[in-house]
Length: 336
Image (cartoon, rainbow, N blue to C red; front, side):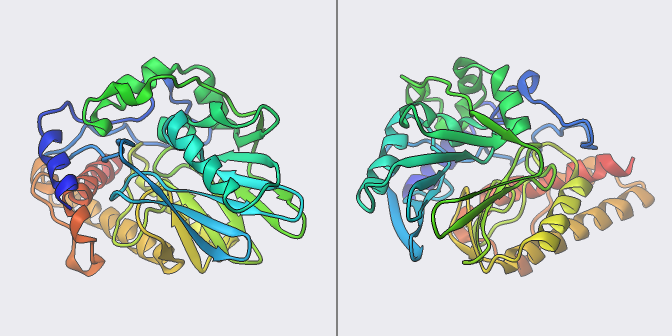
């Protein structure tokens, strides 16, 4: 808690973080109706993602199914799945050191080859560990993730992520940008030997790229940045609040997870989908009412707080308040 509080104080002195991929490097899908990306509103702080000192705790969720959970609030999580013939890893984390932590966690459980690595989006904190995985590991991602990364550089991404690492660009030292090998459109699946793993893209959400990894038998999902962990709200970073809602609705109609491992935050239940949908419905309606009443965007956004019924994790309240104001600003823009 003290570390997190210190981070929040320091963030106030840093430029506001608006993207983890430079704007010119974001590939927006042709069918995505995204609003103009909002500017950071008052009170917005960058997500605290600095990997220094982070240890990933291995938590077994089911036979052969493991979450890798960060020991720091809101830093990245990952995971891996062991089948009869191969291992599949979900996200490679922030840099080579964190990627190696993931490999070491796998090797503590299984000697089977790491045959697949799934990248859930195009952000550096999810893909910058790719380069330490074996050469014969097949990296899979949604095609928009590959398109975005193919016109990106480590240096460019590092510069736009500086607010998330407290200005310490040394965390990117040694990173080599290794692109995914295989892209998919809406769904990809593989049989690891007695265990089916699916990867879905339901549409734009926190970013245009966010994908969901799902185990249909175990009903466990890794939701990356589309649904954060317990005690959170969504962040419509790219605008498109109505699109975000449509994406979550499609997710709810397609898969039925009992357990959600998010890219950031604690493990939560599948009920988070309904909470996120309700939240997005509410802010869209609030934005419509504000427009009807000719409320200015400043009056609507600048001092807004989250309804207590959403039970935000106490350590995450400042971060989620910034997300909330960002979401309101995006919803307001969509009503004009």
